[in-house]
Image (cartoon, rainbow, N blue to C red; front, side, top):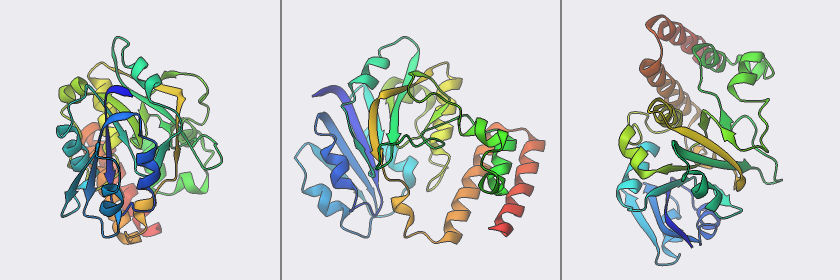
Amino acid sequence: MSADVAAVVVTYNSASEIDNCLRSLENVTEIVVVDNGSQDDTCRVVGQHRKGVRLIANPENRGFAGAANQGVRATVSSLVLFLNPDAALLEGVQPLVEQLKGPGVGAAAGRLVDSAGETQVGFNIRAFPTPVALACEALLVNRIWPRNPVNRRYRCRGLDYTRPQDVDQPAGAFLMVRRDVLEVVGGWDERFFPIWFEDVDLCRRIRQAGYAIRYVPACRARHTGAHSLARISLEQRQIYWYGSLLRYADKYFSLPARAGLRAADAGGAQAR
């Protein structure tokens, strides 16, 4: 058993994925699933698992950040593993635990791989986004010219994924954080609603508080990705993504940079 580790899994219409996720957490002693008003059989599937799995069923969608904070409050372990329902551990989490024993390390993340076992390069680890990087995202430059130098730096295309190292922003799909560090930075920012940029923001605040974030390739999880977006319309996705992008910009960028991003968002929204 992985002592003193709590797993928090936020679900939304995750019936097809959650079983594998929970089975992979068999060696984690404290597991909480927070469901955001799923309209499928997610809660029923969760209820079939061992008694050690606790379900919090929200009547409405509280967003990822809000549900993640609920999960943290419902647990007591000193380390909290945030794992998406479409991710399943391939090894135990002890390599992450060992890294968090190090001085000044506030969070640790493993390697996300696809169904073929290939690292999800460009998603697993990213640099903190600059205004230029986000403008390229908004204006679809990165989609049209994915190998441009701005996108390569942002998506860490040159990273050696076989080597443990300190990083900026691992995906929140597979992230372990010390509870005391979550308390220092104030947890997840629930204003990023319902999704997008909440993990970027959390990692940035952890780094700003003086803690390192460690990437640990020896700990892997198989990750499907984007399973919960199927019931969200394209228009809603655009509203959520652009809205969260601008909220992130308002927190961290200068006034001229924010003005430029708003113009890029307007142009990108029309192009999409």
